[in-house]
Length: 364
Length: 181
Image (cartoon, rainbow over all chains, first blue to last red; front, top):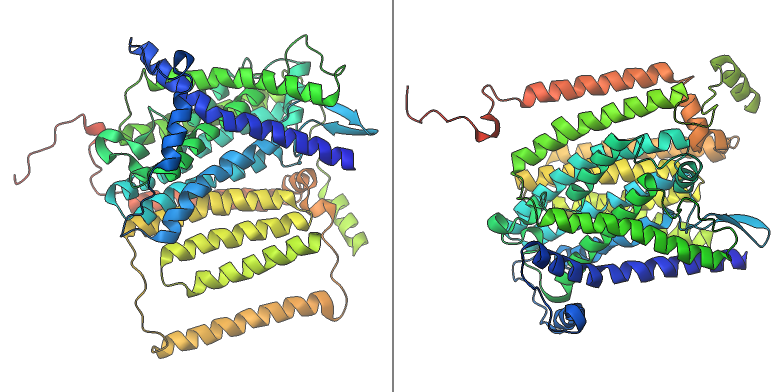
C-alpha cells in the first residue's frame, strides 16, 4: 500500500512542478511571441533572450504594496484570488501520465486518481472557476469589475455546454469516462483528432472562451472595462489571477492533448520496459510537448484576431458551436453503434424490466 | 481518518446551510450555498457514490448557483433590511416550515433506525454503468418525459422573455430615428 501512496505522491509532485513552471515560461512566450508577430524585439535585457524577465516581475509582484479599496467587500475581495487557483491546481488529478504498470503485484495506472467518474470530475472542478471571477467582481465594488464578472459568468456557462458535449463524444467510442481508457483507445486505434475533427474544432474554440483569452476576453476587455474583474487588484493578488489563467490554459491544453492527440503516448514508443517513474517522466514530457502546441496556438491567436463583440460571442456559442457539438455527438454515436469506430461491444446491455424488478424484490 | 473527514464536512454542511438562511446579504447566502453543496458532494463520495458527487458539483454549483448569482448581481438585490420578527405571517410561516422539516427528518430517521434498518445503497444504485442501464431501460419513459418537460419549460421561458419587438440583430440595420410617430 505504501508504494501505491509513493506513486501518487511522485505523480502529484511531477504535475505541480510542471504546472508552477507554466506561468513564467508562458509570460515569456507571450511577450516574445507578440513581439515576433508585431515585428519588434520584445523584452531582451534581463538574462539571455530576456528569459529572466519573469523573475523580475515576480520580485515586483511580491514587493508591491498591498492595497485594498476602501469600499471593497473585504472577505470576498480577499478570497477571490485564492479561489482562482483551485480549479487550476485540482483538475489535473484525472489526467494520466503513463500506462498501467505492475507495482507491488497490483496493476496501477500512472494517474493521480483513476476515478470512475474521470473527466466528469475534471469538468465539475473546472466549473467552480467562475466563482472566483464573480467574487472578484462583486467584492471589488467597482462598476468595471462587476460588468466584467457578469460577462465572464454568462460566457463561461454558455461555452461550457459546447465543451462538455465535445468531450462526451470522445468518451463514446472509448466506452469509459476514465481518461486512461481514452488514451488506451487512441493507442489501439487512431488519435481522436481524425475521426472527431468537428468535436476537436468545437473544443479548441470553447477553451478560448473558458479561459477568457482573446478573442473572447470580454470579461477583461481593456478598451471598455480597464481590466475587467481584476481592475482593483495589484501585486501578488493580481499575480494569483494571472497564474490561475495560465494554469487553467495548461490543464485544458493537457486535457485537449489527452482527448484528441493521444495523451502521454506516442505511436511506436513503448514505455512498459521503463521503471514506473521513468515512464511517468517520459509521459509527462510527451504530454507537455503536445499541450504546448495548444499553448503556442493560444498566443498566436491572441495576437492575430480582434476581440469579438458581446452579441457576436453569444451568437457564436449558442447558434454555431452548440449545434455543431450536438451534430458531432450524433455523428460519433451513430458511427460507434455502426461499429466503424472500433467501439468495444457490447457497450450497454440493458436488463429487462421484469428481470430488474425480480432482483429488487429478492433483495427486499 | 474517514470519520474525521465526515465530521469536518458534516459540520461544514450544517454550518454553511445555517449561514444561507441567516445571512442578510444574498450574495453571501449564495456563496454559503456553494459551500454547502460542495461539502455535501464530499459526503456523497464518502458514501461510495462519486458519480452523484460529480453531478452535484457540475450541475448545482457549476450551473444553477451561477445563475442565482447572475440574477442577484443583475437585479442588484440589496442587503435585507427587515428589522426582525415583526410580521405575524412571517413567524407563522417559519414555524410551519420548521414543523414540516422536523416531521420529515423524524419520519426518515424512524424509517432508518426505528423499526428495522433500511437497506444500504447497493453498488447497483450509485455506480455509473448500473445507473445508466436502469435509466435507459426501467426508467426510460419517465426519463424521456422529464426531458420533454424541460424542453417545454425552456420554450415557455423563451416566449415569456421575448420582447414584442426584438432588438436589431448585430446592429447591422439602421435604427429608426426616435420621436417619429
